[in-house]
Image (cartoon, rainbow, N blue to C red; front, side, top):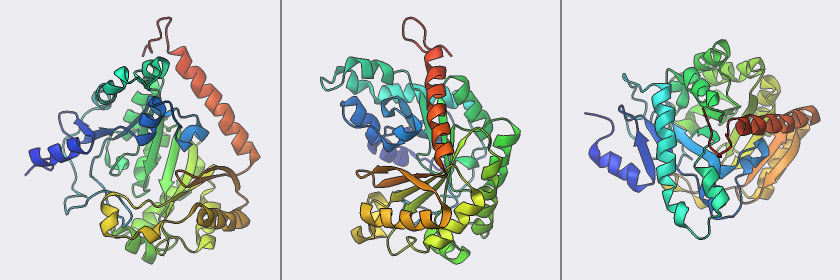
Length: 340
């Protein structure tokens, strides 16, 4: 029986997804901040890294494939979640079709009086790809080639991984396919808690994540980010333990994001599991004391705190944004079309 039955495809489509490619393993969904910017409102907190949300494609090449079924995840789970795929679309097919799907999903904004024309025109020329929508993207066997395909078109690539496939991260280095941003999501500070929080389908998730964290120092071009989804009374504890992992990995940035009581997670957790911004700031302060990382951005709406390793890293990142924007501009011809 195929993983994506007609009934399941309809469910995804109703939820706002578009599943593309002949092998049906790639998904695209419009982010809330994309919609916000196109309504001439606020941008995503990832503006810290140079992202302009109306030009950002949120996608995954591994829809519903993941070795975890985390308690705080807003997605629904089934026994087939860690099911592998034998047929995969090529990186070129994926990039071609996610761009097409993005423009179709946004088409309604073309006639929206609240959408400034220049933003709509820019939105039709995507400049960023966030490989983070659903599933674990390192399960896609051609991830290095996908990132190279994205970047060859003048777009930035942000990769979010749970760190359970360290061999795939090694491939990114070996194949000169570093993403613009590399996030490793870290969910606890010890093996027992990791198993409990993630409901992992694999026996050695803790060891794999540690191996991936140790690889971060080998990335020379990507911004490396240690990312935490903080859930009260679940994994929002032991700041010293998180600090030890951060000191080992030495990422450029640390992100703390408060859990949101959304989707299927509402059946597993309570609204009271959502930390306040003040609680996140207090937790970040404890991490800072034990690592020296500096708070550089606070987003009260998304409840996100971003910390940089030091001032040199912060200035390097700001310079990188200028270079990214220049590279994108150089791809645009006199008629305002990005030429790949």
